[in-house]
Image (cartoon, rainbow, N blue to C red; front, side, top):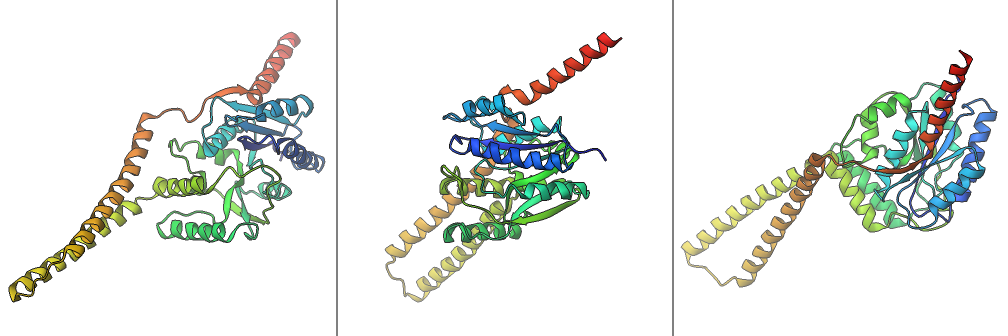
Length: 334
């Protein structure tokens, strides 16, 4: 078996504080893997600039000028972490036998990449990086994360618990993943649907090297809700169940009111009426909001807009240059 070409895809959004260190550490990992004959010398690191507003792209260009391992993909605008990650994987897959995705903040243990590659040599197409424990998280984040995975499992969405987007995928697994054309991306849910032999590698997550988290509470909740509504219609069925129960309760309450009228025990009940109206009105607004969320996703899907636009692609340009050179040498040779 020839040594596989590995590309490490790193989505970046305003990562100027960590990018140089990330490039240095990942380059060291690639060099060690090449020295140990585990991967090809053509292996690369692909930084994807997701419309950053700081000096991220400038630093990527600076790294490219001095580091032969580093390539860059600059998106025309900010499209979000999942789309930026997909853009990097689609770009890298054309020249790679396997692709590792990792965030730029150095919280994931980069030394585990060696284990990923070893598992790939053993025949696994997908290798999940799974957090062994969540000691670095706050109590709130740890509790909500655990609750999220339990909820997803209950409603029939099979995720890998404590796995983010730190994983290795083979070329054939990536090709299968790219057949999923949905606009509402939730890669943690899509990758397990691909199938093919997979395994897990456990590691301890570190503190962020520098900078701020790009996933505050608001984004985390939105991401979780996107995951639920992208893969399950259980919330709509839950709304239907609530509506059904409300009808039953209302019928019982109506029967009780009629009975009270018949026996002459009616009393004024302004408070109970107002509370009932508010309660039913809240349920209606909640139901309309959940259904509207699904309709909104349908609206986005049917328009089939591009998920991202590439402004600069040094990864593919480099490959085209090599191909043109090979064609020229073959022509001269003849």
